[in-house]
Length: 413
Ligand code: NIG
Ligand code: FE
Image (cartoon, rainbow, N blue to C red; front, side):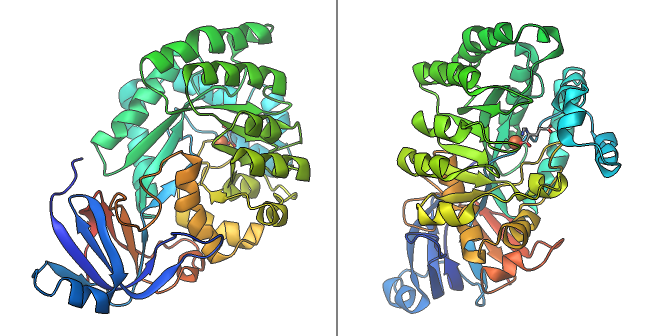
């Protein structure tokens, strides 16, 4: 999708700039935004816009007081995969735990079998279907991880499909190589051999082909130890690729601290994170990505340490974790509600969590705020305050979306 060369002035909006400030959305009441050549050119009040642009006769649209936000960013998904794990959902309802299912050969490994069997075309069609659901939440940037192929061919196929999604829909895609997600069946008795493969073959090849913007791992008893993850991180550092980590989801292995010591962009999940880990994340500039969908589906009772994250000034992002196992959640807007209800975040924190903090979790500096010079990725909502995004469940009050300055969804009133 190409950027627009058009100019458009939006007036009479409640503009949530998400600019500076630790936890609020930095609202401009009766605000105005000038879009030009795919970028935000100017931000102010409608009164200022009237005097500033009086001579210019710009195409102007009134937003009738509605909330205008940056386009939303879903910074943690596993959107490209084959098959379905509804059977495991039923098993969990019957009392089996996520870990039990994984240790018995289900879980991630069962998605690996289905993903290896899927063609690029099948992966593309199913991914587009899921992506369409996300787009209804006003999402303009999505991160997509591999990790359901594990062998080089399938990982590369999934990452290629992920990259190509942006040729079919108005979306920016950030890709992440997640080779250290689970031990594939062919390496069942050779953990070290699989980590060798990730470090010495898969990661260099994927880097060489430009398929990954970041490298991720799953640090957990049912996945990889901190020592194994450290080997992957060292290689990623040598190749100059930023890192992220699934950490402290089911237990506290010190994954977030390890990730922070490598200057990770983010550590994700974090239900079992302790204060030492929080302090390390603050020092490392590592964003905490909270995933209430996985918490909800796994009926987890331990909450991430939100108060400590706030106290230590760790930015908090929110994402769907859209995946076939722990979080078949296809709505970022519903996830925002869950972040309020389950983790007691405020609507302002949640809005920052899917905009400015999510951009930081992806290392993207050109989006996530309404500021001159940034991409004109914007969403207009049929509500007048951030709480209106978090209050309904099962309804995305998204009225219009601009992607790099083009109106790609909905229309103005
Ligand atoms: O983010 N935690 C590990 N990985 C994914 C889920 C994988 C799966 O169950 O398929 C997650 O929850
Ligand atoms: Fe995940």
